[in-house]
Image (cartoon, rainbow, N blue to C red):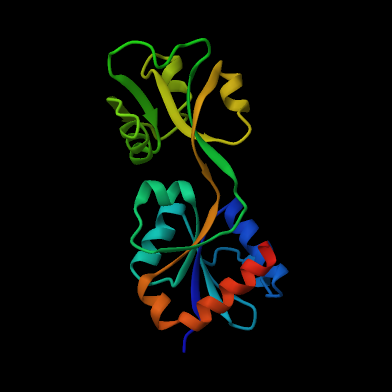
Length: 209
């Protein structure tokens, strides 16, 4: 049988996942010395690792070309859930937050607010939960710019330290939800390769504590 294939989100989550694999005793030299390769073996061929952008990790898992994936909860919330979420891996922690210019009474007044964000689905769901009517503008670059130039009343974005907000005279009004890296599984793989997946998950759980 071919090895399990796991899609990892490139960057910091990739680095933290590789560190976790090494703590579990798997040899990750191929991943650490990947060069331009996009598919690598881990351990003695126990499984393969595929490197991809966050949203693509979900796509590969949903379509079954990868059995498992490691991706941030932010991407899961924005891009749907046609897969199983198996485990909170505990790293990559940050939060979604609503922020606006300092000394602004965001919730004052009756007109619909305009919100700039890279995460329109998360933003709409958040304000629907408040029964608030908002206009959402999708931004690809620095979301913090939008309220500064008058494009929006506020932003919904990922906040780690808050230093970028402070540097641009913005402040958090309300936290939306906590985020961390999650292990997800293809629905068919979870049935067909149940024992292999459960074995790996058990090892991860024991290490994470």
